Length: 267
Image (cartoon, rainbow, N blue to C red; front, side, top):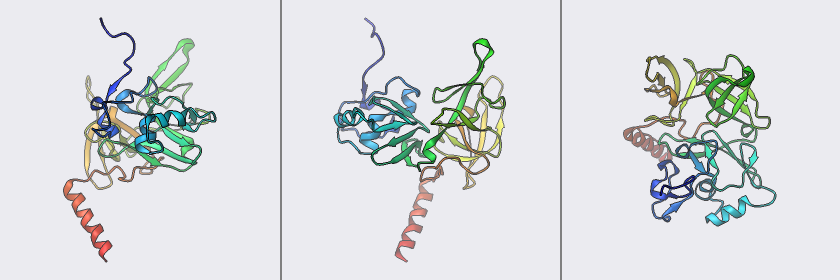
């Protein structure tokens, strides 16, 4: 007999490394529910509350927090009560009682982190356009990487561009083209989490286009077009960057930086 229906369990050893779970915390972990993000590109709300923000000690406490009548935890402005709700890149997590807001991002090691943001920045999010089509009755629409369908988009918005979405209205307030000179953030591949300026695009017919990027340290790298997420016009990002600013440092560079910091502390 084959298994029927969706899988409901996830062993801790099979969980994505980006969740940063300890090995000895039990056999199982929370499996993300079906939602706007893929399993391996998201982290369940329960993991965020228990392991990242540490507002709960146990999974049972997470359920108690989420089941409070008034609603305590908002994802992109909407109250969520499912502990397994998948929270993905760029999503805004808001806690009403403490008036804290966080944006979910990757660090340069590909791990999920929560970057604290202001109340003004928590009112919008950036999303990458993954599809552009014409639906029934010739209505044009775009689909974003967080599974939003937006009808009647601006005619200049194309696949791989970035849209700025107002979380109160769900409407597009601004868009950024994926073109040379704009700031990009990588969502996958060997250079995940790195930030740099787009230099140029290599086109390969019948294969993946390659984008060449240079970071503020002068290091150049290349990746597939599907991994590139534009986050700013020119070199100004629209969102707060992680503490590492998306700059990858080698082991030697980290050592030198640490020595400099120690010298400054000694002085």
